[in-house]
Image (cartoon, rainbow, N blue to C red; front, side, top):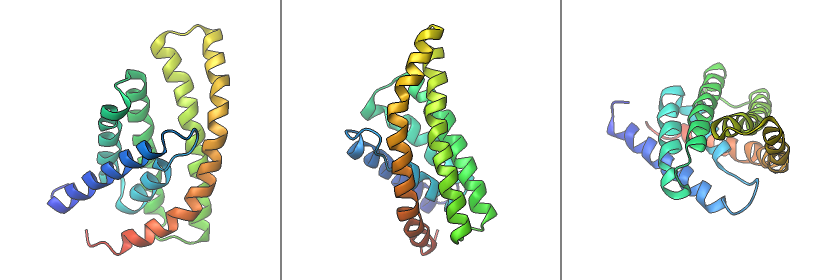
Length: 172
């Protein structure tokens, strides 16, 4: 990332992610970060996406608190997330046809479930939960993952195509 335009793009997108997460934080299972970050990584690629994902993962702590298990989860998950969608963007040459959209939606749903699965491992390990407590934590997370999956199934096909088109007119 060499140009001021790229730095500004990353900074503005991180602010958008944090603002979007903050605005929707009171509604369980409803989030905008998935569709926004996947669109960014798909179009702008892995390198810029990694800057956005890592910066977002760290700066969001100033609003939501510094919880080490969450920082670890976000740094692992969102960087992996960017790699996955950055590779899909390369595979489809940033273009979006029906096949690409279907693959992106399915992958987004899988990644949404993976986020919860990673949390079900990282948090209990970090806090030293017993096996029974770990199972209870994973069971309790099922109530959150279903609305998140539904949200992903709705937001990605509706918002991602518009974002991809909007990004294509930027001169960066």
